[in-house]
Image 1: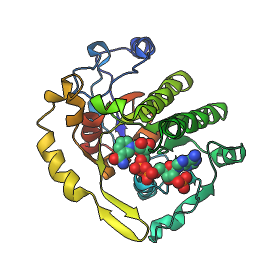
Image 2: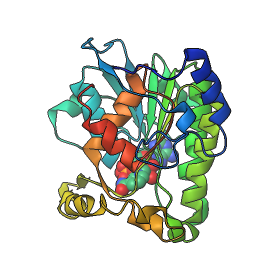
Image 3: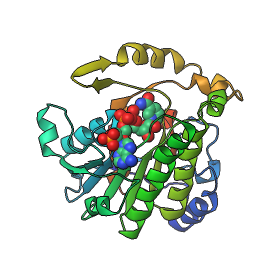
Length: 286
Ligand SMILES: NC(=O)c1ccc[n+]([C@@H]2O[C@H](COP(=O)([O-])OP(=O)(O)OC[C@H]3O[C@@H](n4cnc5c(N)ncnc54)[C@H](OP(=O)(O)O)[C@@H]3O)[C@@H](O)[C@H]2O)c1
């Protein structure tokens, strides 16, 4: 478990900086990004080997999906208690770790009964999202998650991690509902969890995706692309087309940072882009 030492700012200054920067775009946490607010930059100075707090209970929304299942496994591997909520409930995954997840069935867009899954939960990680018509994309990426954010805030849950998505540049216009839904959820999180939001903005996520009984090894494409595209970061800043060069990221890296963001009390609230995800995932601290 890491300890982040705020070596440049006093806690009160940090608090006021964090508050001051919680706006439409939130606060960027990738130290490799030139969008970082230099005045609130933090330094990680010390690693202390303290055991993780095993009383944590994580609820993974969409825990039976591609990213969600990796997050459930990562959290269980670290000794946390894990529950999942999705419309189909129990995952079809035939691996032993899946037996250790409490599987809840519920639709975030319908009724209130799904809120029971939040009982006793300390942190929520939402992987709910997807594609379709513009109105469907807004509902699943926006409304469904906004419902979850509000219910979690009402229950006094401490942290909420949201798997959002990077800016896709010119493609945003083609998937407007997806992009607008993601940003609407982010905005709700900034309001309802000013100190407890962690927003991950990956581009393409690669890893092993299960489709029925088949396993699709997306890393065959994603891994070499990630290696090449890590050198295109400066081009990533070019307006409109630049965001298309966002490098892919390994699903295990996303899972690692999501779990850390959910349980590490000193993981700072904010928006973490793909470069931040890679950097945090490579730290030995957690
Ligand atoms: N995969 C990528 O390359 C990528 C890249 C950037 C961002 N992301 C984001 O990462 C997140 C996870 O992506 P993924 O690829 O893992 O997607 P996925 O496999 O389709 O998982 C989505 C999950 O959401 C659940 N879900 C959907 N609607 C729901 C509702 N109304 N109520 C409750 N649960 C619901 C689904 O389960 P049920 O169908 O059983 O409800 C499923 O478990 C998404 O938000 C996605 O936009 C993904």
